[in-house]
Image (cartoon, rainbow, N blue to C red; front, side):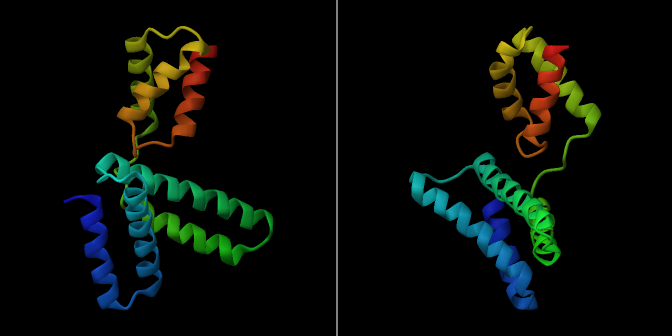
Length: 148
């Protein structure tokens, strides 16, 4: 079952259950996916749908941090709840050991030796870890390995 159809089914379930908060977030996710399909005039595949959800989660993390710094805990809590709900649709996250192994394999495969080779390594890792790891953290690990 595709992510989009799973979201549609969950919207129907939330509607029947009267769960307005969940319904709102699910509709927002579906709208973002549909908007991207309309903008790009394509049917999104699973990876592109996941990328859209990841972008939404990243936006909410940034918003929560802003709300925390502005002492608006109520709004930060709402953003965190949305993050938790959206994260349930992402594949299981990689453990640190799995991520290290993936980085090592990518470094060996691309024969990267310096920070100048980081683009090749990140392109490969982006394909392999899509939706399963925070690419910011992956980038930091690659940079540390190439610099050290």
